[in-house]
Length: 280
Figure (cartoon, rainbow, N blue to C red):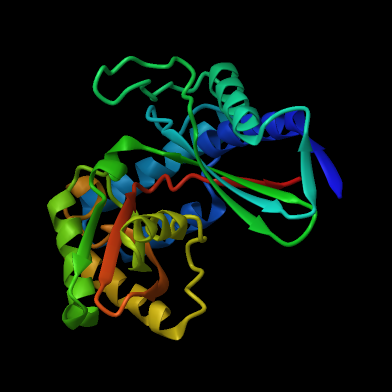
């Protein structure tokens, strides 16, 4: 049994919170660069170049990519041969989020109650999802999730008879209704299957998979390509100003479903699809 200190977890989370908000992933940067050569709208090209310049400044000056530094979504894979000492996992993660956001001058966006609207002041509590896995390590992935894309996300319990065309129509219609609100170009996570609550989590976890990395499932990979093409044919374009680059990528994750159900969820992210991970 390997012991990992809660303090080690706190320090790791604090660093990940800052790095995720300062440094846009190389996969996203490459996708933006490639989109410029494909974009037909002069205004769209200008917007894409501005996004790349913004990412460069954030990276070189260690400042947030966006003023919305998101709610702190944290995925934790805990090896079953690990024992956390000197504290509790949730408390260690929340302490890391508070430290990272305060010391990194990142905007605190979390409210203590959704109706009284009082800010907690340090972006806690984190939204934490844990999974027990084999081994003696802990993998932590911090995903700052902005409000714009989150607000445009959607879930629907389709009928099994709706089939794959029903899934496609739902996803594309959700993007059309979102329009410019989630600050396109987008990275789109799609969850299919499972239950009401699980399908939303599938869609969110889909956003962690790197751009250019298709699903290992051939049917899912084909659906990803078809959805990306249909979304980019909507003409919404960068920042909703028209063009072919409405989405940079679509990731689809699936899970077995009940015979009477076809749950589908879409979790939308702006181009700043931020996530950083570490293995302790």
